[in-house]
Image (cartoon, rainbow, N blue to C red):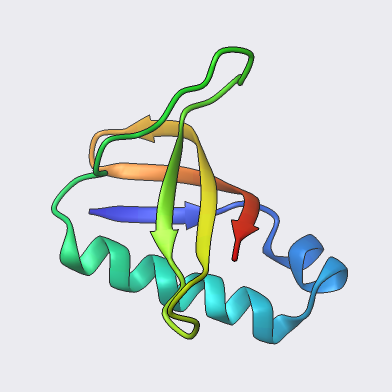
Length: 84
């Protein structure tokens, strides 16, 4: 299972490089634990389904990432928000 996170430079400019590294670490852990995306969520009115990824550095926080595209076993993800 592979993934790519969109707009990493823009995310680093808006938040910080450390924050982007935190997201990538969390995504790495998510995809190591799961062979496939676990139950993507789709709410009415949303353009894309999204996944919930536990924050690896904060036990109570959860990242939300939109699944923009899936090609074979590769996911193109976009950052949505964090729930803490």
